Image (cartoon, rainbow, N blue to C red; front, side):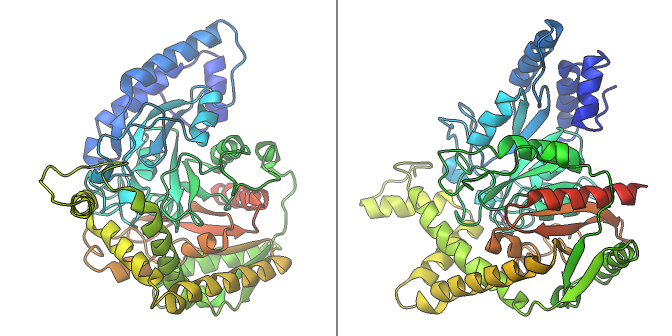
Length: 481
Ligand code: GLN
């Protein structure tokens, strides 16, 4: 029987021939096959993954030095390009589309001898918070099948939680890695904007999108971050000086550090915040204070503006990014007869896109239209600048900001689907990091009395994932003991 703890232990077991890559892949394939009701995968590369596992096992037997992700079984969200494999963003409009190249992150994973096991279900074009907007159907929460797994990277979160892979990649434009990690009780990291190449990630809102990592523990997530954060000439928005080369070795600090921690008054007093989530996080903050950390409440009077600002700007960017799907250059083509090119575009797009994507395209075109541009788009850009300035000022005095990842635990399927505004408002604590471009992580520390897990969200200064991860590691080790 195969069991996975972390990558380091797995590599030791491989070294001592207690297990093999083939055993690991077979275990995950069986696990995927026995849990198809969760609908986490869009496609599984069973034969290919087994062949690669065998090849890697042979390499080891020949005595070759293994690479850092040797035999690590990884799943990809269906928005990340893997050469010669289908990628559809869970949309009918990309039905049958095959990627012509590797996303840079995929190349980096393969270079380190990882095994890609398949692609994971998600909300269409990564738009959603519950994985109820996929052309492949809903994904179910493995802890309670009547609940959503979160979104938009719901399949990737479930794949890790339900033992279908060791690590998965998702994308986080407004919380799509952290919120499903929170709902499923695992670790979910959104690196800072510019820390990981977006080349080969299907774009939703380009100034917000980041590829993120799901894992069972912070160590593994850190190792994968170190690997996928390599600088990349194909993404001009990447940080020029990359500081993440040796973060894995620096993760464990010998002496416990007393961090300076801020939390926002408006967040902790927010009417949408579940009472028990609030209490357990308050207790955690008290415990940190007792241990010697500086824990201070600060004002953040812009909180009410983050959701509207996020939805205006991301819809605007999405309406532009998604204009390429016209059925001529990409994607679904109508089988009905049309009389003009315009009608042909309209038919292709009307048939290919789902409801939520159409809503965002319309909203985006509206806020960019000449009569409303200043009132909405320009105003939202100004708010974004204010948010960035305010956040930079906070990090002059504090190492990290701490808050809940979501105001509620995983909700019921169909509970919020009919009311998009309610769905959007639930993103209130995650969109802040994307608006400001800072790194953020959700770590699974708590259990609600309704039986569901929930996490603590930690945020740090841009280009300072190290502090974020060290603090997260210290906290989760303390909570285990
Ligand atoms: N729930 C948010 C949205 O629907 C976030 C999505 C994401 O991060 N991809 O826009």
